[in-house]
Image (cartoon, rainbow, N blue to C red):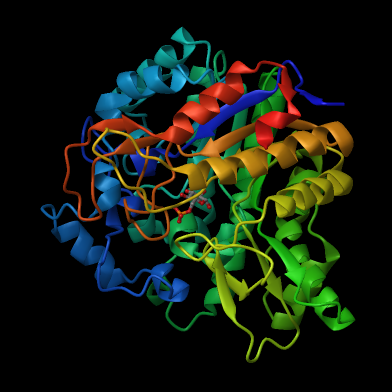
Length: 493
Ligand code: BG6
C-alpha cells in the first residue's frame, strides 16, 4: 500500500504542561509550587543529572526569599496565562484535534490543604477550555505534572504523607466534575516512574527533610501513595462518568543491550522491566513480583494494605500513555564504555544513532519497538503523549526558524507510529508533539532547550519580548495534518 490509512478519530495533537508555559506564578490566588523554586543556574553542570534532579531545603528557602530574579524560569514560563488566546489560535491553525496540558494544582488549591478551591484559578481553565472548544480541539489533562503546592512539601513532606494523596484526589474530583463535559482523557500523574529519577520535581521529596531515614524507602512509599491516589481517581471516574478515560503514563526510554552478549541482553531486559513495573501496577492492577522481591531484598518495608491491593486491582487504567524521546544501551559491565544521556538518565552510547544538542540519542525505530512492547504486554490502546526534539534554534532575520533537524526528527518518528498501526496492528489513540510554543525545560530550566513549533523570544535568564515566531516545523506539521486520513508514504521521504 502506498498510503497510510489514519483512523478517523486519531488524535493528532501537541503537548505541554502548566508549569512550563503558564507563568503568572503568583497571580489570581495561585500558591507557590515546587516548580516555582527551580532556577536556571548558568554555572551548573547540566550533564550532572544527579545534581540537576535534586533540591535541598536551603535552596527552597532561597527561592522563597527571592522574588526578583527572572531566572526562576517556571515562574514566568512563556506567559501562556495571558497569551493563551493567540497561542491557541496559532495551534488551531495547524489542524490539531487535541491539546494536552496540565491543570496547576497550586492554582486550584493554592496551599494544597485549603477547604475550598480557588475560583479565580478555575476561571482560567474555564477560559482556556472554552477557547479550545471554539476550534473543536479537545484537551487532554494531566493532573500532576511536576508541580504541587509548596506548602505540602514544607508542612506534610509531600507525597510521602498519605494525606497528600487524599488532597490530590480532592483536587482531581473538583476539576473532573467541572470539566467532564469537555475533557474526556485524564492522566493522574505525568511519567509516574519519574519519582525514582527525580523525586523532588515529581513528588516534592527533599532528602534532607528525612534525616536518619532510608531515602529510597521514602521514595517508594511516596510512589505507593501516588498509585493509590491514581486508583482512587480511576474509581471516581469509572463510577461517575462512563464516557471518560483515565490513562497510566510512563517515561518510555528504550534500552538496548550494548552487544549480543546474553548478559547484556539480560541487563537490558532488567532495566526495561523496571519501567514496566510502573505501568504493570496501573494496568494490571497489582505490584509485579519482581518489584516486591526487589524491595524485600533492599530491606524496604512498603506499606500495602489489603484494601490498597483491592483498590489497585479493581481500578485499572483505560489506556497506556507514554512519552518517548530517545534510547540508550546498557551492559552488565559498563566500565570504559562511552556514556550517553537520555531523559534525566544516562546509559551506554549507541554508535548507530545520532545525538541531539543535549546529548540524547535520536532513535525513531526505538519508538516502534516501544509501541510493540507495550501493546504486546497490555493489549490496551496506547497514547503517545510526548515526542519531540529539544534543540538550539536560531531565529533568522526573515522571522523564521529553519529547523529542518526537528522536521527530520518528527517525520521519522511519526512514520514509525503510522507503520506500527498499519503493519504491526498496534492500537494507538493519538500522538502529541512535545512542544506547543517553546517552553522552559523541565530538567534544566533552560529556555534555550527548545521543543516548540512556535519560537518564543526569551532567553535562559528570562530576558526577551515573549514574541512568537512560527518555525518551519510548524508548517511541516500543518502540511501533514492537511493530508487528512490518507497520507502518501512519499510524504515521509
Ligand atoms: C518529559 C516531561 O519527561 O520530558 C516534560 O514530561 C519535559 O515535562 C520533557 O519537558 C522534556 O524534558 P526536558 O527536560 O528536556 O524539558
